[in-house]
Image (cartoon, rainbow, N blue to C red; front, side):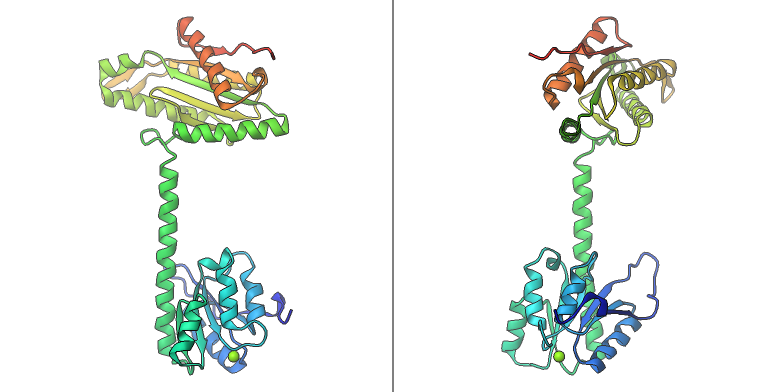
Amino acid sequence: MAGSVGRHRRTGVPPVRGKGVSVVKALIAEDDPTTRMMYERLLAKWGYEVISARDGDEAWAVLQGDEPPPLLLLDWMMPGLDGVSLCRQLRQSDKGKRVYVILVSARGRKDDLVEAMEAGADDYLVKPVVPEELRVRLRAGQRILELQSDLLTSREAFRERSRRDSLTGLLNSGAIFDVLARHIEIGTLQGSPVSVILADLDEFKKVNDTYGHRAGDAVLVEFARQLQDAVRSGDAVGRWGGEEFLVLLPGAPVGAALALAEKSRARMEASPVAAGEHDIPVTVSFGVVSSADVPVPGVDALVEAADRALYRAKAFGRNRVVAAEPIPAP
Ligand SMILES: [Mg+2]
């Protein structure tokens, strides 16, 4: 290989960091030392964090690293991998899809521009490069990169929101189902138990009928907060249905889950929920199960077992914690 990763240099003054403005990393690939130094100086002056490569192979090596620079200034004619080939190779790789590429060449014919853009370049500059033009072209590229990053951020935020219950902020039933399925799989592989608590607010309809729906919502939010507060990191809490909540404790034996449920039960019984001018007494029933007690643990089997235990807690008079009866293997 003509270039090695060790040969590229980081240059430039400490980047100027404005409030909330992130410094953009730019990669220069240029074989002519004088031109390369001019780029380095200019880009550093304009606030870019500059990484510089002496040919295409060296640039390619830089781009294989973690967090590759998103903004690329590539010379076309270089020994080894030239700018257009590098661009083409980049666009075929996963990492190279999101970078912004400005190709620079002494070749100023329309055909050359078309060839460069067909190879995946975003912009094309003809040598000799005028600093002011380079500055605005880089800035245009930076704008595109920022838009792209905003788009990805909001897509991520949207995805996260679609996993949450809007009232309590807990995982919604679909999301907790997925998390549970994954933990059952991991637990089966590692031979460690997964415990599940299904909690249901007692006579919740009465709360709504007596105090109104807003007070009912306040109760749901408060119980959600208490559950979230009670679990260990690594546990997961979700809203399973209207007034039903599911807690998932990976690696915890049933005894630990029972203890957590009992603590939560006692806490709710002891302190009424303040909603407006009312202090609303709330009790909760719990069904608890461990994957160790279910012959073929799966989401449905576990939740069904927890649900049966919960049903018994209700039948025994509510406000209690009941463990699922172990299901004998067939
Ligand atoms: Mg050259």
